[in-house]
Image (cartoon, rainbow, N blue to C red; front, side, top):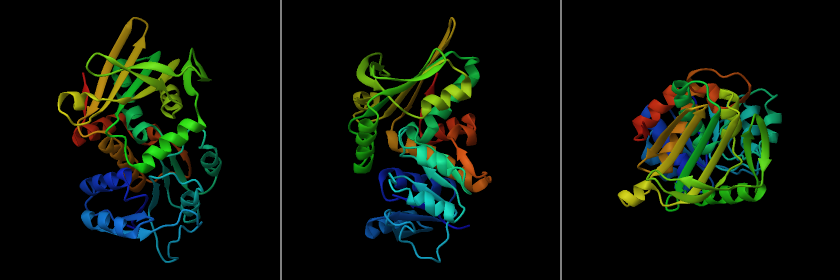
Length: 316
């Protein structure tokens, strides 16, 4: 098998995903690609069965030699020129994107008419939270309202690329995207109290994020929203180390259910599970050309199993 090309593979999301893929599939070849060859080489050396490459995202060929071949392109950084996408389509291999906000996905959607699979995974944690929510909905039954609340510890907000992405997405979309009474709409009323896992709340905001249409269309829920906040996580309060905390609240008529998902190691392994699940799916089971979302490719129960194996808990 040809290597998986990890654009931004030496960053937090890329290196964490590569490490997880190595645990799941020890013989899977991976190419860690970045602007700094030395940094990429260090990550590759730590992985084993991996190579390093320098890329230039301003070039349609990414600056890669003509003779190289890859099995998929995974963009764990913002590819504003979409040359990673073009490279994947030119070579007819799958492309996975995690950094395009709702206001950025139009070019990727239009490109979906061409000859390679495109996975839009710019959801929270690359779609694995949506998959976990779908798993608990499966047990809950018909649902009318889905409310997701995530707390990103402010001491675990990711590297510089992640911070830049969050600022860019906030500037591009100051409004939030929700489904209310069966209608998708934008709202400027974004401020909400986000529940923490200890019984309190912290100030947060509704988000414009792909989890909302994914959950609404997968379940038929008439009311869907996704809120997040940055602040002190339950792990930092209890143990002094940041955790990643997500609450999933479901309701239908008089029925309600609340599930809490937390990872004691923070957001990196959660996102890594989301990306690694999709890479695994793309390489083990052929995916047709066109646009795909995480919930169309991954079984929710498989996602929650992988999350738990990584160290996350999902209660009750």
